[in-house]
Length: 128
Image 1 (tube, rainbow, N blue to C red):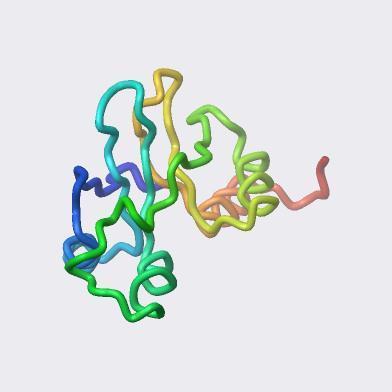
Image 2: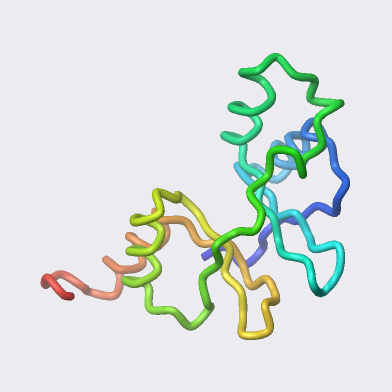
């Protein structure tokens, strides 16, 4: 899990989001909540490619909130890695936000990270 999840406050243009992704060498950003009743958002390079570039829209005129995923299915920080990996796999997601019991952002977990962590845990036998 990457505990240094990069965030951006709304409103942000997709160009600004891409510039931040390039600066930090990441492929997604967390869109912060407007207030405590709001939910976190997630914008990825693939969202911008699909909803902005492929449709010949302007990076400067399309706000991140127009193409981000919100609400985001989140993982509890205490969830066992095998269940987290199963959830992401079942939902066809490559990454997800990890939150604590108070819904505070803890980090971003990728399916790749989970598979590698599972291997590091010595899980080699088939389990259910």
